[in-house]
Length: 227
Image 1: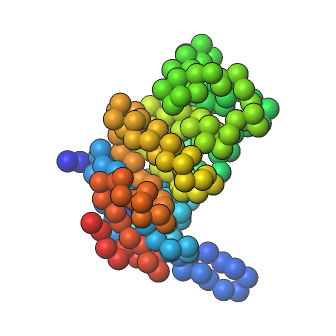
Image 2 (image 1 turned 90 degrees about the vertical axis):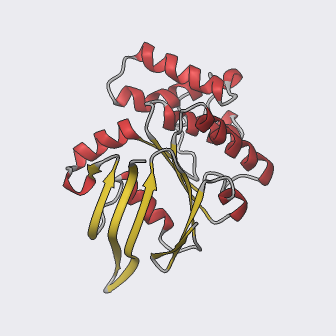
């Protein structure tokens, strides 16, 4: 099976005043197309940094990264932005919905940015909102939605351009256990329906990780084990 992600020797550090903080210290990591991986590790282990690098939101200081066969290190920032819009959907711990827009308009945004017409974007957004159980909330603004509803809207937004990969950074971190379970069920259903074929999910929760096909453990900026 072809690789969705292949990372070799990924290194990333940050400057804090006169100090350099080494976050990733040579990460080797491979993810197959169609796989669901849970990326586990304690706070500060480099999970979110690795996710951001896979998403093209940050660049590594050293190492190579191929996503869907594309060498992202050889792409300019505009090229990476275009690639991310079309190939990668991202769900964050915070929902990042635009408060002035209703739920449908929020979900439409990535499609509009990618150049799709408003009618096509709205139709796709409404289809996804029905699938995530928000048919009755399409015209509501984010502040009128519960946390779980906002996160399900964010999942719909991440999938509006039919990406080949879904990246999720602690998607249940701001939710109570029951609501978090509903969000995970939504992601599972999206995968079952073929809308989120390949999933990389950052978590520190072993119960969440149990839903994945495989877990990858990060410790002190390196992969410690994969199972």
